[in-house]
Amino acid sequence: HTTMSIFRFPLLYNIDNGLLESALYGLRDALLTFADYNNLQQCENLEDFKLQLQNSTDYGNFLQNETQLNSSIVEHQALLKLVSDFNWMRFQAVSPLSQFLDFISYEFMISNVLKLISASRQDRDLMKEMFKLNPLGLFENITAIAAGRSVDDMYELVLVDSPIARFFTKMDMRDFDELKTDHLDAMLKKNYLEAFYNFCESLEGTTAEVMRTVLEFEADRRVLTMTRSNVFSKAIPKEDLKKLYPNFGQLVDVHSNLWDVDDVNQIKDVMRPYADYHQIFEQASQETSFDTLFDKMAIKIYKNVFAHQFNFGNFYAIVKLRQQEIDSLKWICDCIQLNQMDMVHKHLLIAGGN
Image (cartoon, rainbow, N blue to C red):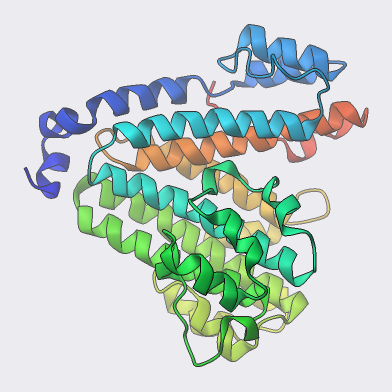
């Protein structure tokens, strides 16, 4: 059967993907609820926190082998649990779902490589940095990157044969080593988003429709975050900035107005016709950061994906919501460790729905 037909006829979709779809809804129902978060915030120490997760949530005894707890250990073990769930789905999946899941992991691979490039440029020990990488973004031979003395070395030694090689496409004659880390970050994420968007469009049906909304948001967030950051850092020349915007999204028509701005108020003016984005610039303050407001908007979009059955967008949404949940767990742990529970609500974002 064709790719198009599996999204048109639920029975065909379920032949290949029914088991994973049902497991996926189990993972969604296991997301921590408002009540779970309320109970975790009552914990006086990390041992209580561990017991609360163990006795009342699907996290169970994931911390049973940890005798000395801190927020980094909790974060790492929660990530390993997510990786285990994701890898099980990836092992069971057949094409085109397997390719879709690969695209999800590419984002984390890119982030890991960028961390190593940044560490290399700051003369930090790359082997030590390996332990700080997101386990969702590990790939074969990633440790060999440490042998590279420059980005071009890293590319020739390892990255050219890696799953993310296709995103290292030069836009001009400059070597990778001539590009600042911010520029490399923007280039890789632009190429990734465009490739993922084109792949989802090729699937047609509900997956294309749902992921169009999701990825247009991701592209717009990328454009606005990059533009706002560059206003302060001036890390990327304006002439380069306009080439680094993804070529899709709601904001495509105003890209030409954005790359040339000189301050945040000018960005806010350009956003006036886009109510949701304009509101973020209006509300951003010392109390609620720009990134937190975008994260809140993202959670709403990811939750809405589950209103549609028989589509791959749900797999993207569960990974993103679990990632946010892990960030929230780490934040609560930090507040417990520092005895600053009055701060817990400041950045706490709840991915679960009840």
